Length: 88
Image 1: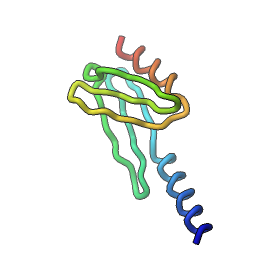
Image 2: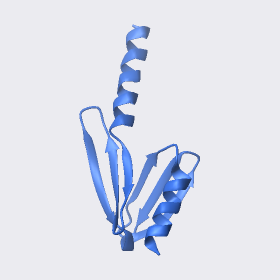
Image 3: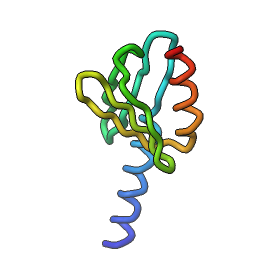
Image 4: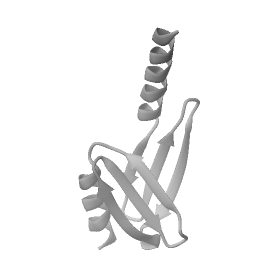
């Protein structure tokens, strides 16, 4: 009932958070979006990044191909700085 629903949502939120992340290298941004059964990984070359913005704890990366990736993270401003630094 309600306890089971809260428990299930909590497990789902934990698995999504555990399977998500961003890595910035000298050549690309690797975005890992978590899910219940696994994760999807997107790689974006730094020269294809059109914009990086933050809104609260959300990082948003826009690409030259028109894709936009959003990832909830507690350190979005630090990631934006790392991406901007890697691009220069």
